[in-house]
Length: 208
Image (cartoon, rainbow, N blue to C red):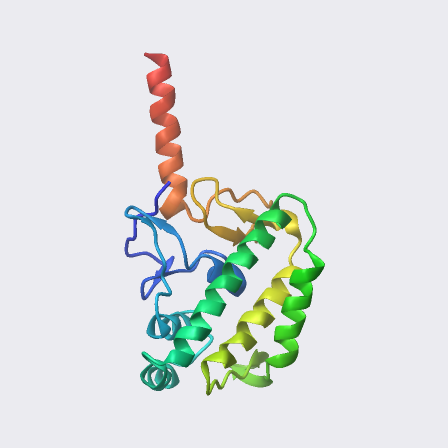
């Protein structure tokens, strides 16, 4: 089922955030819209916008990186590698959702990225609470591997695979954080209502 973009809490600056986890939100940057499969990260500028929208990168810093990286061969080469990694991650997530384990090859790839691009942590004050957050200060496009690799590592190590699901109405993936673990759709606004309306119409046709 295609996803129709609309003003809602699920969309931020043209990006979907329904995954409840950064790696899954990264995976969801290639949804199926009414016009077909759509790449939401076509260039370095879009990538920087996604990093800002996801909260990984501060807005003011992001604008300077967007200007610095825009239309550079290095950024274009990095983006090709990043999107290829996203599709390998998609295969891994689909396997996990089907009950299969993560391959040793993919674990080695993530470990290599973590080693080459380690995340730096810092304590940050949020009101009266101290949180441990990644201190993300990229200089080159390849530095973006740090938060991506960390998010993937957290996805594979911290989330039970039965709680990792593909929406019943589209291709988006999410981490089900509901108490009963009964979430079926990426979002009630995006797919839930559409599926319910379609089922209702089908029941009415069957009753005619």
